[in-house]
Image (cartoon, rainbow, N blue to C red; front, side):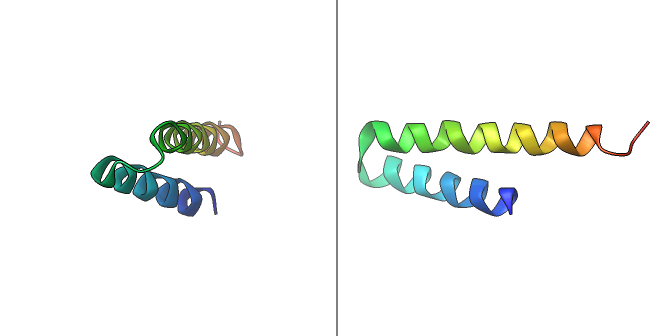
Length: 50
């Protein structure tokens, strides 16, 4: 679920860069996507692995 959301946010960011749409909002979406990816990676390592 988080990977899907992060992927969608990344695509929206790239489209925003290409078409110059919604300047700052696109960058905020990118930051949210990166945070979600980092959270998923950290949570994946912490659960059930020695």
